[in-house]
Image (cartoon, rainbow over all chains, first blue to last red):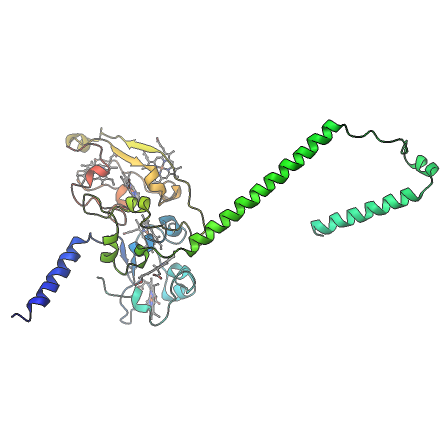
Length: 110
Length: 219
């Protein structure tokens, strides 16, 4: 058992720290819509917290998005063409869409 | 034709005209113009002095404006070249929320973070875009006639435009905005209007410690 206790302590520590953090607000999960194919790619998640540290709400609302989850109908092609997330995730304003960045947006809900 | 070339051509043609007229004899000149050779009355010294003074002040104003422009440019350069804040380097929500001030209710207090400079959200895609001015209008939503509000002893709700205009523009709430639903439905946490943001992105009505951020008095 003694070999386990440090691990247990670490686990306990992590869980308490995680519990101490307030619940995350405004993570929006994009549901696949219409013609979009899933092919096993997890849904895209938009975290408000990352973005509101950097931008006021009015940078995105309503110029790019409505304040209603599911109203943004962009597909991956639109995004690569510079719509929706692609307004910024284009390698100039924020990191580009490349094969090593897919999983930053497409990830299982935390 | 550009402005500059127009002015130069005007000057050149004026000079040519002067030379031509000046080349004529006094008689012809007298024919052309009435009483040219009489000395024109000199501008009175007072007018001259006023004009000179005005030119001097204009020059000074120009110098001042140029200086202001230089300092503004320098400031802007410093701003864009600033090192990223710790909050901008946070890799996860847990990491970030440790850096941000908290409200008594345990939730992140974004307004305080903004005030303290812990975060500095840009007002546009271009970091040099200026933010909209703060709009200082505190209002009290006093619908205590609402049967549920009255029955529960709830008082009016304060709404600060100043706090909201740091993040939002008028359009976000007023034109396409949400309609306040005041039908007094008996759901204690149903706040149809404010809920559009509070609870989705802005602080939630999560526990009883949050109520007095909006309600002036609680039962």
